[in-house]
Each structure stands twice: as structure tokens, then as C-alpha cells.
Length: 178
Image 1 (cartoon, helix red, strand yellow):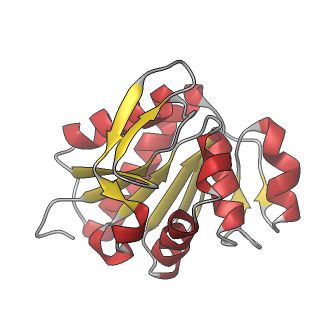
Image 2 (image 1 turned 90 degrees about the vertical axis):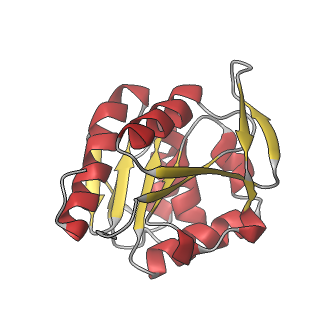
């Protein structure tokens, strides 16, 4: 990763939390990363407040090996993302390949559906704590939790710490200061 730009995938679906999509997009672009927005299909997806974001790649066409980091925003979108088998598979494959998998708020629902939190420290929105525990996650009520390549946060107010933790994980892997 040190010889090329960081490649970040950000998942979207309708009813996403706009700050949890746009803040990471801008933060990683600021860090000179190549950001790709991925939806179930190519097209526009509307946030909980009606703000659109366009996906440029369909989940079925995305390859885990093409990305270093995947970000799963919250809102109610992850409940819909869990119904998209290619999205669930992409998250699972990213984790299996040791790539950085990051989820915030309800995004941790997708981690549970991908079956990658069993025995792992994780956090997420307070309303999904039972789901995370039932999927075998070791829930912690912290602004950001990192367990290996898995990074999770609870809510929009945690976005700065969430983004910093992702960039720290990248820096540790690449030996660079992103």
C-alpha cells in the first residue's frame, strides 16, 4: 500500500446517516485516498434527511482485493444493506483478507450479518447492542473500538475519532503518515 494511493470503499443504501457518509468521503479525499462509493446498484441513494449520494459501483462488481478499507455508515441503511448478499460478502471478504473494516452506528449490523464479530470487541448504536452480542460480539460502550482490522464507533459525534482510528490503522500497515 505504501507505493500507491489508499483505496477506500464506502457503502451506501437509502436511509443512510448523511454525516457518516460524507465526513469519511471528505476526510479520506483530504488524505489523498481514492474513494469509491458502493451501493447495491449504481445510482442515487437518499439519506434519512433526503440528501442524495451517488454510488459509482454496484456491490456485485466490487472486489475486496481492490480496496484497503471499507467503511459502513449507519442510519437505517445497514438494515437494507444486510439484504444485499454482495454487500455482506464484500464485507466478509475484506475481513478475511485482513483489510480494514470500519462500521459506525447501525453499520455494525452489517458486521453481524457478515458473521465477523464473533469473539471480537465491537461497538455500535445503543439500539443494536443485543444484536451485536447475539452475533458473538464483545460489546463496549466506547467512542471507537479497534480489534485487529475491525474498527467500530457508536454515533455521528464519534466520527472524528472513528476516522482518526482508520487512518492510524492505515499508517501502521503502511509505515506512512496519511
